[in-house]
Image 1: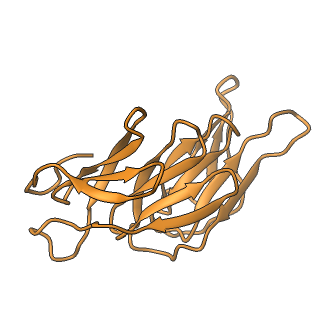
Image 2: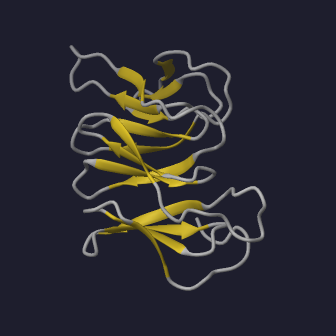
Length: 184
């Protein structure tokens, strides 16, 4: 099966790629706009995680492994509603942690997928001087497995932001990169 994360939709979308059957599955999440942004697969557990954009928690979809099992769709974490907080994320090479990119949030979202807990990492997370609303900071990133660091790409922020995957230290690197909507 293939699953689509609800942004403005009320349910998770399930697509059977063999038969072409398409269904809404799981609970009704209501009419809130931009609930989650992006789906990230944990290859170890098979669970799919949706990063909270305006939703108050992380979406978790656990596909069944057999015909005897049922699909599980749930939400965990208490992260507050609204504000277009995080804009997708990435999972670590060991498949244990997801980091959410701070869009309008002033923190990096850290999701431990082994026990479904969340932590917020603080650091020098600011938008660019051309903005007065501190929005659209980082809209993408990548993990370098040898350096064991996450690199966040500045959209309206002015420098690259890193997270040390061993210590969770957050720091800015590189020169100032001025202007709006630079990288995703």
